Image (tube, rainbow, N blue to C red; front, side, top):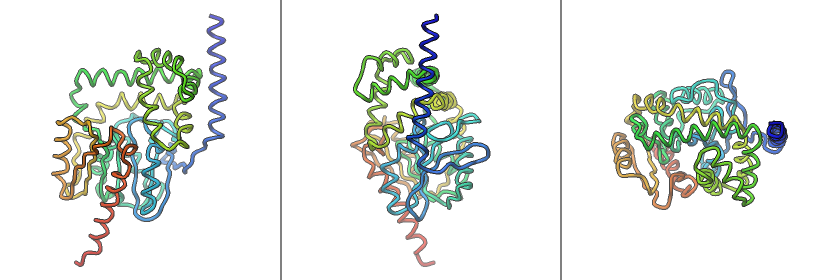
Length: 335
């Protein structure tokens, strides 16, 4: 027991030193905005009409780096970290849809971002974007939904989805404990350097799935600009991030139930981008959504998996550009 205690203490010291070093190397690249006791991290570039990027359930503003840079050439491109993720403060309320929508609303007000804006949401962020448009329609000029999560998937959870959700919660909670004693930090350092054996053992201890889950995530991160990789790794090393992920996963059924009760405005421009491997029933659900809009379109990204913004970023950029152009033409049209 004495040896175990000594190893845990050494790991905790290693973790504390790593956190301090990460704080010096990777300070918030954007500004910290106080929304009433909680500070959210917001990155902005460009000028003109505002475009807000909402990331997936465990992703941060860094996931939008490529798209945000290109949109900033013709608009004010803004990406933020939800509470508990990235550089933002830990969450102080349940991670349900309406709570997230309220926090985003406060962020736009506190940061003095002009509305109406275009809201771009990926996966879980797509469900959040729809809920925001239904709650604050006057704030939104259009939606771009990137392989969005549908509330129906999580209202009556199938056994497969139930297992997936429990796995996510279990991995996140165990990951938080392993992060506190430096094991996640050491495993990720080895994995990013090409090592396999130790990361595989750590992943098996946390999720029972060996290396596969972590390797898939690392594979997606490697599609991002290389300069973001160390920052993503630094975030994954923080217990705060794992605690937040567990909270988002645990609240997913409640989030879906809240989102399912909301209807976005019918006159809102909506573009849905679907991955190439989306099941037919989900494609039909998205077709129904865009048909409800007076200005809706559904595009299948044939070269993309779930993270379309990494596989075919030009599709997201063009969808934003089209909504902005249509809005400009509307204002120029003689009355």
